[in-house]
Length: 217
Image (cartoon, one colour):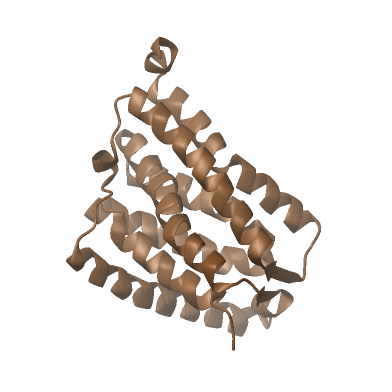
């Protein structure tokens, strides 16, 4: 415990990010290098993600608690206005990202979205479980922690770190990732910097996940 308390804020930043996102970054980078065309979201994939998040999230919270953090420091609390704001954030972010992709396609003649095919093949229990855990996990550590831990360095340092970590963890999605995941990460980080609340981000993330992962038929 004394060793944890002696860590500098920058010394804390790296191990927390490696713990929370190192496994996902590794899987993402290896997937990108394999140039996967079909992205299969089945029960095995979703349960694996949930298991990693439960283990790594618990360890990260124990470390942060020993360092004097608590969830309220990060803005993790549920309110109905924040829930409504989350739905609004989902709509606004998707409109902005849609037009960004349209402009890119118009200027280049390329359609990155057509280069990979996501397949939602998971069962409802797996989908419900990941929607209950993944949005809060990602937004708490990816945005809330990284933004608060680096706030003395200014907004854009935290925004860049948060969005960069999100992008690396989603590189497996292929060429579409820089046009969807990166702007989404920037939008979410800027919203957090303004509001200092996690729940709207988690709601927006969860809604997007529902549309992407809900079993068809």
